[in-house]
Length: 120
Image (cartoon, rainbow, N blue to C red; front, side):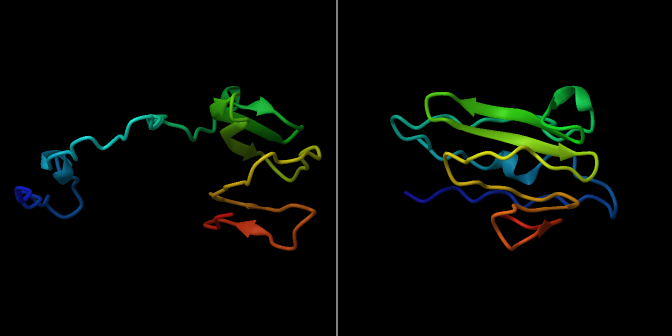
């Protein structure tokens, strides 16, 4: 059976945002989550300059945990640096995924330096 066609998005005047996202009218996929699949996590406003949300790792660097799984020893956080600094030496129990929003950073153990827009 074919899916019904979605209505075309209505455009807003130049410089204005539409009142409703065009995809809201699309029919969701039936049974999108397979048995045993974990639900996704949604964190509104994960990125903030308010230092009260960050646990200090050094004098200039803080970490804001967004997701922690003690059973898998995995986590996702936002690392925030007010300036140049060094985070204490540590090991990674799993691969690291990072997207650099601004500034630059790197590891002593690697020859690359990540800058704004880089994905590690």
